[in-house]
Length: 220
Image (cartoon, rainbow, N blue to C red; front, side, top):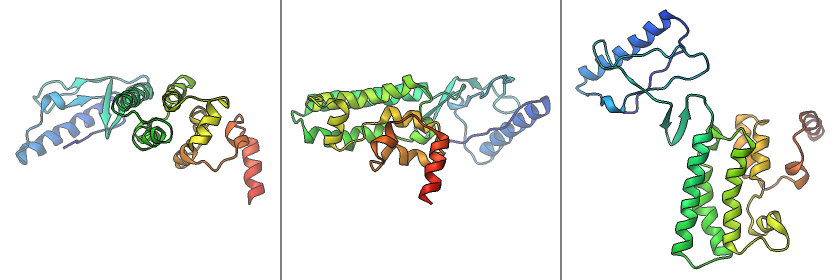
């Protein structure tokens, strides 16, 4: 179940090898007595200048259906490798949950924030290492979910959104951290999203690689 075949294809010889890989997979499934569902077998071309070769499901099988995106382990992968579809899906699911909670619960304040942190935020950031937004628009959409949750919990108050997040004990820096993630190593992504130990000057300033390097040297 959930078998995948991938290969870099830049020549006719590589196209033939890719087709041979598919043929071998089909032959193995026949020997094991497992029939492949043709409707669930898809072809996803990645990268610019792709040759977009058609492949068949076996030597005499039907042409494999080409798609522009595919979902794997809950993450949507598009042909252009942009996370826009995944961001839109996560934001939509988060807003649906907030709407359901507002209908089912009359609690607000701290109880509402606990519901958000327990059920909405983890779902919103699921597998964010693989699909973090690369545009300000995508980051703002994610930030909008938390802004709505704060409003539903009782509003921002006189201190504004950032102060309301601080009092609620949640990170108010989705937008800034998402933008900063483009400067981070993959291993640093989760820390950048969940850590509350950074000082405001470290979180809110514009990323500066030279300054970051100097700070790192001083810490050593």
